[in-house]
Image (cartoon, rainbow, N blue to C red; front, side, top):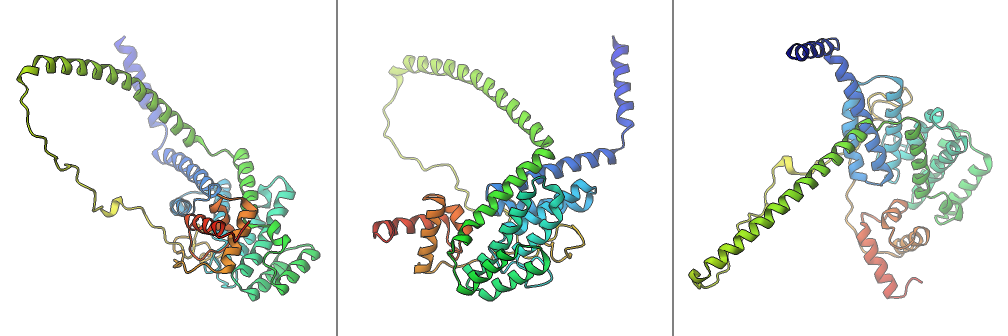
Length: 366
């Protein structure tokens, strides 16, 4: 029996020695990268802006150590998602050319991902949405010249139906921000269409090995905790019975004392070390490590982009109009989606909800 155990140990040693640690590290790194890629896609689908940026910075730090066509493809997709996520921010720059806005840069990358899309109509739909929203964002910001420049840029770099270009040019000339065509090709529709693309891509290229393993671990730990809880409850019942019996026996010896209010011994956590604080990801110029020749090193730098802070001012009629159109499009309560479609000058979903209540009470909206 002892000899069998020693033979098994010797076999395990030989097997572990036949694989180099660098090979193991490579496989583990690929699994971690896949996990970060899936996490990034999920943050995008859930519209979690800050969490997306944090995950992106981690993903970016791992990219230089990994190679291969599949991983290169995932880097490109992440760069595309980063540009769409910042599509409403015209002051965020991804390209050397300052006139190329985030959604225009996204269209540039999207053209290289055509081989990853099985449905050709889906690819064309996203391409058209990127064009329309590049123009719509400029009109919402009051920058008609930038909207015209965006149309010319798309016309020179992509092939679009002429009637689409003419229609958008007419909308820009007349400054029709709420034109039915613009509303039908909304920013929220762009996000939903990209989400369907991500679902199809992840189904074809599963990257959830670590997620499945972690899920099993969490489920098993929960089962163990539940079993331990039963034992603890039985022990606590016995302890309660013993305590009650002691109280009965010592009832005669109890002395009456005046009640006093004691200060809480719990010390409030007023100070936090830097390690406890939520990391702040500055985003100004994103870099995902030389993704392709069509983008420069400066155009991919995501680690320095910073979202400008705006101090909310008084509500104006055009902001109320944005809010009313957003509610008509998405319904009351979907404030996060409404924030993606319009520029509310730094306001939050809670502020939108409060303003909508005011408009309802004053009968300004139906």
